[in-house]
Structure formats: C-alpha cells, structure tokens
Length: 189
View 1 (spheres, rainbow, N blue to C red):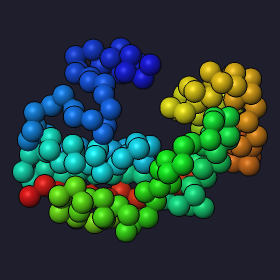
View 2 (view 1 turned 90 degrees about the vertical axis):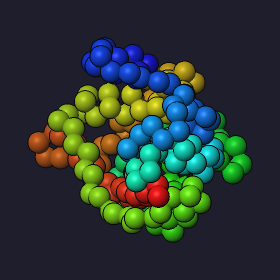
View 3 (view 1 turned 120 degrees about the vertical axis):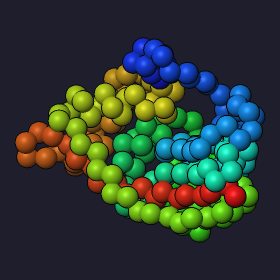
C-alpha cells in the first residue's frame, strides 16, 4: 500500500519492494548511503539486513539506523502498544519494537556488519498532530495497524488508539507525543 502512495507522489522515482534481510536487488557498491528509519528493529535478523546494506554500500558510504530509544523515553510506545495488543503474541525470541533501543546493541550491530562505528546520537522527535482525527489516521496507517485492522476491525483499532493517545491531548485540541530516537552511524571502509 505505501509503495503505491509513494509511486503516485513521485512517479519518476524508482521503488523496489523486498525483505530487508534478503539479498536486495542492487549491485554491490551501489549506494553512498543506506538509511533504516524506524524499520530495522522489526526484522527477524537485523544483522542480515545490516550485512546486506554493507554489501550495497560503496567504500566510504554510510549507514544510519534510527530506532526508538527506551519505551520510557517514547510516548509513541503507548499507541504502538495499543496496536500490538490486537495482534497475536509474537513468536518466542522475536525482536520487537525496542529490541535495538540501546547504544551497545546498536554499536555491536554496526561492527558485526563489518562497518566502522562512527557514533550514536539521541534525537528529540516530537510527533505533533493538529487534531484527534489526524492523530488516529496517522497511527492507523502504521505498518502493524494493517494486520490489526484485519484481525480486530476498524472500530476496535480506533477505540484502543483513541484511549492510548488521550493523555497527549493539548489544551488547543492538538496532540503532542515526545519521543527520543537513537541514530547510529557506520561507515564502510
């Protein structure tokens, strides 16, 4: 679904759909940068995805990994938890949305992929929504919401999301969630 929206908005761009931990349809040494934006923590084997990214990078190219910091530093954990409450329990050992939420794990992941570790930054990433409907639409479009819609239906998903975002309503009717993301950077030598 998301790729169709992207294609409609950027008809001249090239889009490829694949599994991050499989061999990507790109030649080795093809890219100056690879960015994992709030995605790597959702794959079963993040190291496989990182090694594939390293393969696709040119010498001197960088990879950036942006993931949630710990749940207590991310208000977005509340609506995410509401969505996940409607899904079947993950299999034992599944990484989960906060599996990479610490500096040591990210550094090890970069190094294990054969990249030079260049550091980690904490980035304040507030999510602002002008009203309840926009906030609900945003969370209902998140990847896990598609499965929750199939299993529980739109009304149930809206209800649990509505309850989860209620504490973040501002006096003017807008919603604000404070989040911190960790951004790790590695370089191919």
